[in-house]
Image (cartoon, rainbow, N blue to C red):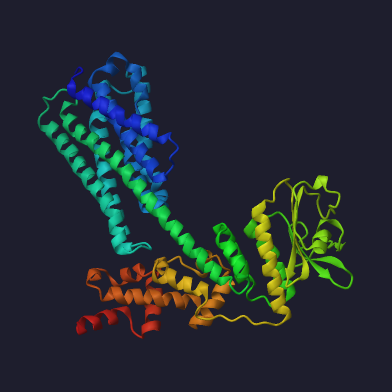
Length: 561
């Protein structure tokens, strides 16, 4: 064949899509789902360009071009699958099957490489007819079959996603998937036309080259344009909505964390925290709840230094307690090189009030931030020489308890953020120490801010539908300690955490067992939808909370209906 209007149009259109997609890729607008979309459109159009170059005879006049040919027809469906799973937030499933999905591409890549060597050696291993047969018949038939099979699998993935609901209301899930299902419907139609074209050429072989494919290629290119531009617009809209939702959720979370700290800080301090970074309230919330069940000074001090290390990513943290009679500061809790085993300090040092950086802080009751310790003659080296230090007084109602101190091996490590957090942590520590000394007992009530937020997550976000939900993951969502959450649920609901969550799952299952939309679901499927991870766990919890089995409950409701 030679150049004509149609192959020029196809080549120009595909090249334009590739150019636009490449420019979008290098524009640094990173979004994993969008990246998969771009690469899919690039590789799918490269497949068309490769065939056009063969059709117009360029590979005959320039055989070296064949060295650049790659079986992208087996890679582009995999990228489209990655796009689908990324869009649905199910990349864990895609990663599980990623290697098997790449087998056709790798196999044909190796086969193509062998063909190239074979051609360079003047068909020393396989004849030209066999190479042409494998390239034109087996390659194409397997490529279209692979695309259709992946299309069916992806469509089933979308349906499973709709049934599982995730943590979203059903109407929101449907709104999210209807766009994707429309894309797949178009793609399946085009693949079906591709198959019809193959059968047509089996019957009618008078068409030169690949000219019979030109109409279907033009439709595919139109689909790629639609997918590239409208898909980008849709993904940006989805991203904007998600960002707004995250900002809204962050505001809600910050509000409830502040409510949980009302008994510790003044209103002015809470107002200041509300205008600060979200990180501040979540960290303080964790510290406060972690201290809730601590009943003596040692437990409080070790808990604070341990959380400073884990939550603030520090190298070292020490709390000095003031000996009022001797006017000295004694190391009572430390994490870092000073720690020796459980709650034991290696070579604890004693610092007179007014001496060194820590002693100065105790005397002035003002924090000290030293960005370069090599330039401060007050520095008292402890276990290791370090480069920067932050020390904050632990004060309550004008009474000093001690000093919260941290050193770091890098100069200029501590920033304004650390000063603010250390001051609040010191205030929290002093408040708790005062409560312990006065034997003040904290109680848990129904209006507890953290319990309210837990109930909101269960009732509105349906987090109980996640079978992996545990005391640990729930505490992470709330940014509070595991022990505190366990005590909170036990005290207010009179259930342990597992039974408390199963109440919501059982109620969800009861609703689905009597809902006509779920009449085709098996009882086990409904239990799994509600968040149970096995049949035995579902039946056991259902019987415990309702006094009957799921089967008996459904049958009874059907009789009454």
